[in-house]
Amino acid sequence: MIISDDIEFDLLLEAIWRKYGYDFRNYARASLRRRMEAFLVKTSLASFSHLQYRMLRDPVFFERSLDEISVQTTEMFRDASFFAALRNEVLPILQTYPSLNIWHAGCSTGDEVYSLAIMLMEAGLYERSTIYATDINPVVLQTALEAVYPLVKIKEMTKAYQQAGGILPFSNYYTCKDDKARLNPEIKSNIVFSTHNLATDEAFIDAQLVICRNVLIYFDRDLQDRAVSLMTRSLSHRGFLCLGSKESTGFLKAKVHLDVFNKDAKIYRKL
Amino acid sequence: MAENDKDPKQRIIVIGASTGGFEALNLILVGLKDALSATLIVCQHIDKSARLNYSMIFRELSGFHLHEVEDKQRIMPGNIYFAPPGYHLYVESDGYFGLSLDALVNWSRPSIDVLFESAARAYDRNVVGLLLTGANSDGVQGIREIKRLGGVTIAQDPLTALAPTMPKMAIETGCVDHIAKIQDVAALLVRLINREQISCIGAL
Image (cartoon, rainbow over all chains, first blue to last red; front, top):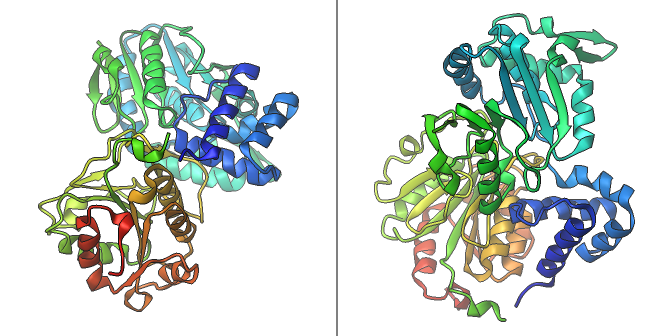
């Protein structure tokens, strides 16, 4: 027997798509459903049908709930080995370009974008770089733009920076006020934050480097294929694509346009 | 359309373990040498920065293929899959794995509840859920869900667990079908695997 919850869940996704244009229908179902269920509990709504009713009639409520449905995990220098590969193998090649376009897709609250900016600064590449940092959710982009962190988080960032091979004092990159730390404005200077939806929007850039880590895991295979194909189209000849450490192009049709540059670091290169 | 009309699903064994888990798993896996067609999916609590060499940890297991799951990997018999450190592991109903970096569940990522609940929904009666040693309550809700959707549930006998809390709490829910000493778990699994319809088990 088909469980009623499943039908209600499908209808909810359909309603969101038709009303607001956010297409979650090809998201990885189990994790999306778990987030939605947690949201049901939080809002004391009895079922997906109740949630659908509320969302259809209350756009403000929908906008707030987008925060819960989309995922906001980002960390500075997550996966030290990836950043080491980026620093030691990719940046020396990018060094040869007079100017660099970089697309960071699914940047969330920006921690990883800032990690990238810091690494580019240290490699002497930042001045000629423009980073387009995009996310589906405008609220997280606002948080990213502020770049203010509680001190306890700065501690973690410092550790991650050092583990990823950072050699300067991390305190060079922020100033403290009260119990908050603010990243220095020059780190933000060449970053353009903007909304972009990998499920529905198109390519907008010709980039030498596209970073999209731990975003594809939230998509099913069809949507992964769409996203990787879109990102590949956004790459210039021999441009680099970086995925998350448990993601790969191995299961996707789009892999025919890419070759593996560093298997363990999940760095690919456009053919 | 009835669920039964779909292609019959392979049976999967989902295993949750925390403190003392690797030792317990070693004992079980060695005992499964004669059941190499099994599909085992393991959520072992582990620090997110851990880099594990599974073939070093489970040296006796020449017959099984061990994997740390990659996103959208297909679930295949004869394999043992481990949740990667720092990620939640989900079973999807189309027979693939999913991963997420969603918030911790029961202070854990990977979380046993996440694996168990998704497995129960995707594979309903074709799930065997096994909860091993551990010092917290992760997996207890998952055991409930597996039982509710028709799967078979097993808890390690807490007296044989390095950390008894987790299996003990599972047993207290009343949703556990079998309580097995750690040295008997493998034999029980072999008996369950070898039944054509695990959902039709009578008295064991």
